[in-house]
Length: 323
Ligand SMILES: [Zn+2]
Image (cartoon, rainbow, N blue to C red):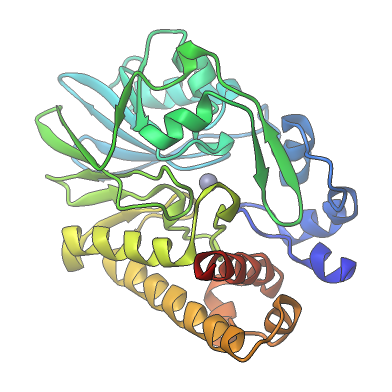
């Protein structure tokens, strides 16, 4: 059992197989990690991180570094970003934004409250950036949370008021910024209970946060209201809005297209149905995990060790939703 749990490693994107093996033993304890311990586990060294920039349209860019991808709208009205990585990286992020014609960050939208997408708020908020997020994510940022990532737990401290959203919304909110309609959409609980997809209407581009992971199997934060059925519903709702020709910006991994998102939804549905069928026969979590329900998908979303944490969360969420 312990060995199996140790193998349930790549539950968050960006963690190398080597890092999983190296850190697995240390991470097996129940005691939640602090940020320093967690960064060591992910092999993230902020001094060494380079921010790279990809242009996806006129005035729309994606920045890659450590943590969740950042979308940047830059134009006459200023700079709007989606997610903000870590405070230590903000100087490098602002330098990358200057390279594309921006000066500072006027507005940040957090796709959700997880540290690797929202921690940069700690630097941006006190410096005067306006912060927006779903009401449930704002609520989570106001208190300490234990983030259960299956093989390890992380204690995310409460953010001070200046680092929390001053703009919150329930289902949908629209910004008109840099001449474009930018829609914030919450299509129900999915990766967490407070996910936002940000749709740049003129570009037909969408930043999904961690509801869509393009760097392996997704993590579902079941302990804070996420669910597999919610992941499927959320992805389908946003895909229905952008249609077959969307520019799809994942929480982690490379920018892609609607066809790749559709394939991801199909994977989620197939694995969900396989797990549900086994549960209907009374199979235990360990039996389901051992049966290899992800099968043909490991080639695309692997490694197989990463599928174990995913299957664990699918099973746990179906079990909870059946109660
Ligand atoms: Zn997340």
